[in-house]
Amino acid sequence: MIRALWTAGTGMNVHQSNLDVISNNIANVNTNGYKKSRADFQDLMYQTLRLQGVTSESGNQIPVGIQIGHGAMLASVQKVFLQGDYQMTGNELDIAIEGNGFFQITLPSGDKAYTRAGSLKRNSEGRIVTSDGYPLEPNITIPQNTTNLSIEADGTVSALVQGTTAPQQIGTIELATFQNLAGLKAMGKSLFLETEASGTPVTGRPGENGLGTTLQGYIEMSNVNVMQEMINLIIGQRAYEVNTKAIQAADEMLQMATSIRR
Amino acid sequence: MLNGLFSNFSGKFVNSRRLEIISNNIANVSTPGFKVSRPVFNAFTGEDESGNGMLQNTFVSMYDSYVNFAPSSLLETGNNFDFAIEGDGFFVVLTKDGPMYTRNGKFTINQEKKLVTADGDPVLGKSGEITIDGQEFFVENDGSVFVGNGFEEKAFVDTIKIVDFEDKRYLRNYGKNLFSNIQEGATEIIPENSTVRQGYYEASNVDIMREMIEMIHTVRAYEAYTKIGESLDSVLGQLIDLTKL
Image 1 (cartoon, helix red, strand yellow):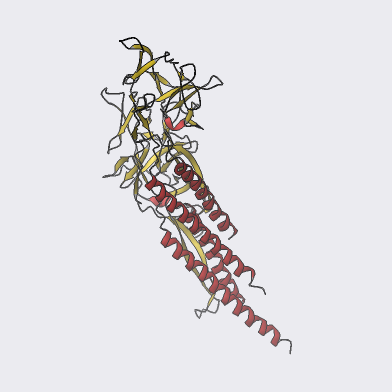
Image 2 (tube, chains in turn green, orange):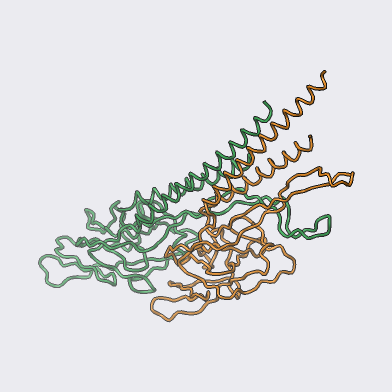
């Protein structure tokens, strides 16, 4: 009886975590380059009261045993790297990646981070940086008095400087991808970090090695599907509710048990 | 009279066990590939020594619990590493306790590029662990895994192993969405007409409506046993009071 209380408690626990994950997805429905998370569950270990297949006293084989489970647990919360929709902005430093790959960013600590949020900026020195001011890797500096900046599908960045007629090539955007995207660690700010599970990054120019191509003037929006999240929210809440019912049932029965002796 | 109290107690006991199983089903209402468990009750009757067929020592016990392997709905995720089996059969996962069987096809890959479960246990193909080394990854309906790089031609890697058993009663819940087979000498059979779907997973086959009804039934049965216990207790009390004459 007490076990039923704990079992239903584990069910409430996992659905609360589920709700946390869904809430975060919904909060990031307009975050550029955001990748939705998904909570996966598992059943907990079972207590075997009687093993199936053993022979009973009368010599018969017991066909099935008795197993009582202990509830559910959170197995993993993984990022789903489905492509988000593109939004046309016309901004020359908004770059979307069509296909696989991440922009490489150098953090202040010197470590590398990876992002698909392509709303890039230029800082006071003319370097291409993220909204947080972290420079793009490899570093690209836009010359002063640039009137027009063009980024090709293969990542080539060319600038047309005032007073000249031919655009000059100032650098190339390189992308990185990983064997196991789900193994990347999200660090917030739409950035991801390499981990043991993700494997080492494979870098290259856009369009090579299975990497996607770059698209200037567009940004990749969040891949959160509001409809899907709403359905998950309803299912999550109802599942939570039905677990509370199980607790109530256990409580009610416990109360009856304790009231046997008045 | 006391026997009545004992059989009454056995009724309460099996119903509390039943609620434990229902609670576990409900807790796993969102666990992918979960299969619902049900208890089976058994009436025990014994005749007394008089030979007149007088019943005594009647009680109820939980005889066994079984897993209902009924298929559940397949949900689309679009994620390349989610798989569902349409039809009979199980994926084979190699754990430290030997091969285990699961209907939960939410896999991922590890740093060695092996197809693994969320716990890191490798998923088996027909020729062992499946290595996915490439940018693109497709699985056909017959379970054959292809890996491709960019626009290059796709290369066949292995076929995801799907097995089934003659007698599923010997499949035991292991936890972590896995089942272990404890039948001695059981042979894995290859199910016919089973297809693998990439980008889908199988939902839990727990039906909340059914569980709620089971739960109400359990609580009310327990309540009835309590009431009968109270009557038996009061009859016993009156009997004891009689002797105080």
